[in-house]
View 1: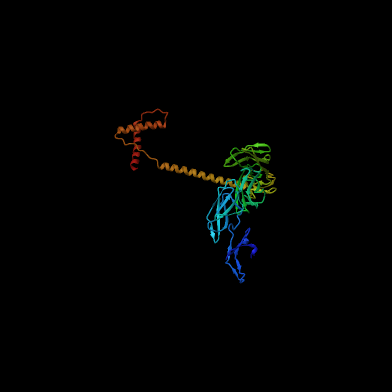
View 2: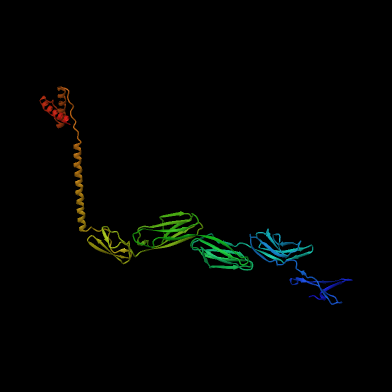
Length: 480
C-alpha cells in the first residue's frame, strides 16, 4: 500500500487525479495495482479496478554459449511480448540472423543463428536489445560465445624403430571445466598417460614402447558442452621383429634360422653375425614392407653353438638387431642302423637313457650322453637263420628262372617247326628239262656240301636216284 507521501495530486473543480511513481523498477514491482479514494463527507471508500503492471524487456538473462566449431551456433532469449517490438543483436565477430519469434501468451522467444565467424576466433562478445514503440529501448547485458575446436591428436613420428618409444599428444579446448580423456592402445584401455593445462587448453600425453604396430584411440568427454570426440592415430613399427629357429640342435644335423624384419622401404641391408664373424644368408626375400632372411647351418658341429645376430640397417641410417642363442641338446636322435631292431619307436631319446639294439643274434645296449651315443653303429650283419632263409629263397628264385627259360625255348622250337613251309620243285615239261634241273641242283648241292671241291658234271647214272627223290617230293606235294 502506498500512502499520500508516495502520490502526487492534481485537483480541479470537480476532479482529483493521483499519480504513483516507481523508481528503479524490478521484477518485485510487477503485479496488479488498485486506487482507492474516500469521501470526507460520507467517509465512503471507492476502489478502482485492478491495473496490472508487467515489465517489458528480457524475461531470461542472455547467457554465455559454448559450442564446437563447425556446429550450429545460436543465441536464445525471451521477451515480454508487445505488438510492434523489434529485436537485434550486436556481435564482436560475425552476424546473427534472427528468426521469427515464437509467441506463448505475453512471452515471445527468439532464436538467432550466428554466421560468418572467422576460423581462428575462439570468443565472440554479444548483446541483444529490444525496442518497444518509438522510444523504449531495452538492452541486455554482455555475454560471450565460446567456440571450442575439435581436439587434435599429434604423433611425433609415423614410423618408430622397434625398441624406441612412440609419443602421442592430444590437445583440446575447454572453458571452465577440464575435459576428461580416455586412451586405448590396440583396443586395450590404459592409464599410463599424463595431463597438463593452461587457462583454455588441456593437453594429454601418452608414451608407448614400440614392439610392433600401434593403433591409438583417444576419447575426449566435454564437461562444458557435453558430448565427446574420438581421435585415432597409427604408428608403424620397423626393425628386426625376431629370429625363429631351433633353440636346441643335434650335432651333425642341418638347421635354418629365419630373421623377420619390418621395413620402411627397399633400401634395407640385412647382415648375419656369429661372434663378430659375418655370415652369408642362404636367401633374403623382400615382400611388401617385410623382409625374411634365412641363414642355413649345415652339419652342426660344436663350433656352431653360440649366439647368432641379425642386423638391419635402414635408409634413415638407423639400425636394429635381434639375437638368437643356439645350444646343443642333451637328448639324442634315434640312430639309423641297417638290419637292426630297436626297442622303441620314439625319434628322441632323453639324456642318460639307454637303447637296446638287436643286431643279428646279438643285443647291443647304447647310452645317450650329452646329445650323442656312447657307441657308433651303422650296420648290423644278418643272423644265421636269416642267412639260411635268404639262401633258400635265392635258390628257389634261381630254379624258377631256369624253368621259365627252358619252357620258353621249348615252346619257341615247337612253334617254329609247326610253321615251317616246304617249297616243292616245279614240275618239268620234258625229260631234257628234267635232266637240266637236276644237273643244276646237283651242282649247287656239291658246292654247298664241299665248297672247296671242284665242280664236275653230273653223270646220268645218278639221274635215276634223283628222279626217285623227285617222285617222293611230288607225292608229298600231292598229298599236301
